[in-house]
Length: 426
Ligand SMILES: [Zn+2]
Image 1 (cartoon, rainbow, N blue to C red):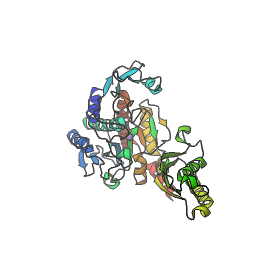
Image 2: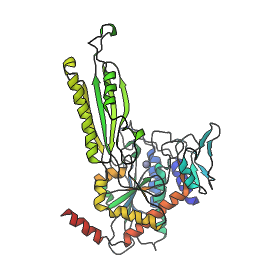
Image 3: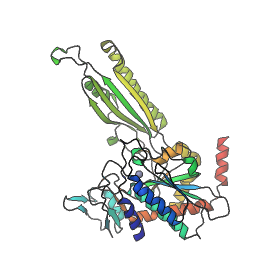
Image 4: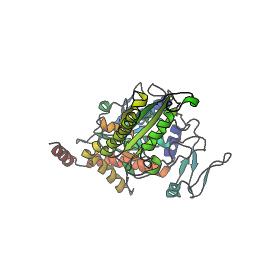
């Protein structure tokens, strides 16, 4: 287990925070500090066709070691960390044989990781946890995934008695700012399907995510001296407030779970003359997703009609932009790739936790780019903050899952599933 810890620590101590305000890819140059190291490491392990392009995307091949034809599969992770919390000077702390009590992350500032608040900790009593020192995030999202893929592939190289087909490895920049799939060359990757190793708790297996849209609304107003404003002033901030009140009050992130969608106000700034409002819309169900977008348009129309006489032109200007879609649509026709991962977990005594993602992954974008790509647990918890931690045992299990999927892919007869597929196409 020590080699997993050493490898993970060697990755998380390199700062790879991405930056949404940058136009370049990768969004921050420092992501190359880890990317270059990873490319070298993959070569050292003995992988073939190791490439790193000018945008930092890394691809590599573990060639097949069987004579018969086997589908090419891929494993994908991202090496950037979120800009939501600092990833500079990460100092991981190792907690062996966790006793189920409070973990003091930082005594000086009294920062404590406690199972009273984070109940998931109790799942890992007796295990080895890696935590932060309370001042940074950890970066298990998604350097745990990278650690797992590199270690699993290394194991397959060193244990050729385990039979597998061609395996492709892909590491991407800028996932955390929603651009990880942007410049991913699906054709060059050349896999029939892939898995992102980017989930949380052990057992997670995900192939459904939100349909997502971003809404930008501008409210116009009319500024008049408040002493003489009666019947003349239009305060755009108050109209924006009325608009928000027209949205279903309880359909917010803080009041929904599972398959329940929501409207989420993410930003508002304004003056009397003009107010800008940002919303996001999320729903797993495509019909409901469309309805939500229609509702925003309908409220817009209603307001414009109401103020048509007084204002003379449209007072509310709304633009809605789709961001990503539920990968379920692309994965269901090849459901055997989820079944395969589930089978791998069960054979390793891991209870599969199949649940919808309340967000998106690079895998969902890749699925729409032609690479069906469910998401598998990487083991970490409390991503994007100082309470982030990962049990080493969960990382080991993820490594086992990758190896098992490789093995099962080489020994499964896919001709039946392929037939089913072609039948459906007709
Ligand atoms: Zn991630």
